[in-house]
Image (tube, rainbow, N blue to C red):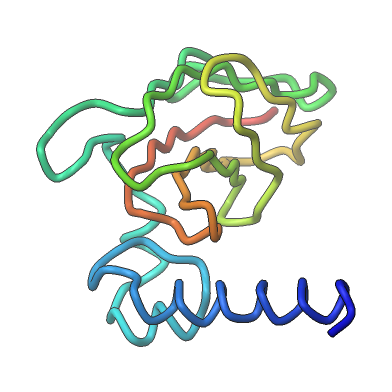
Length: 144
């Protein structure tokens, strides 16, 4: 079997397995998983950055929740993350739209400029298969 075909089969297997073994109620991004877990996007958008045990895992250092940001200024989010069990990396979202990911657990990430209005910025923890595990932190900013 060629190496490319093997890689494709491996990725497809990982995706299928991640859909099957995702815990019920886990925050997931795949529509099929949302339906299987009876989980809504509204529930996923909010988050305390804590695990079931109550341990804090995600801190958004800046911008502060409720900040006002100039529309011409690129938004840079500063963060500090301790991975929860099963976590591998973090994803960044603006208004539930994926903006990027990183394995860096402390630092900053540029989200670019944003249109005027109120925006929700989230950091969500994911497994190696990119399945969101339900540990997230969100803030709201107003761009003027």
